[in-house]
Image 1 (cartoon, rainbow, N blue to C red):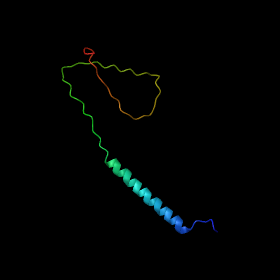
Image 2: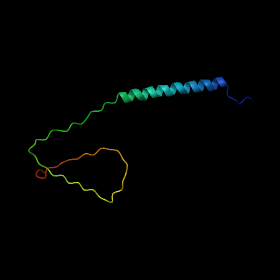
Image 3: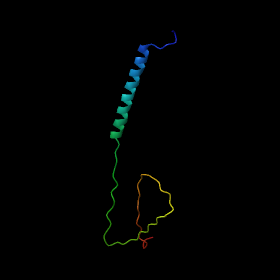
Image 4: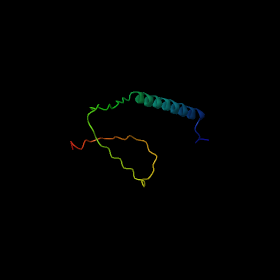
Length: 80
């Protein structure tokens, strides 16, 4: 049959696919290793300062499964 692809052509395409996949994986892994993460360090606060925190939780809020970070800022009312 004239329209069939030979076994050698299929083998070459499979080998090229594997090589490209391995090279792509190596590039991604090397980029992940090069990522620099700088931790944020909280500044120390003198012990003689007071502040107030108000937290309101609504009982009717929808429950969601999420991941993330929460930042809490404490503001001294005397300085605002």
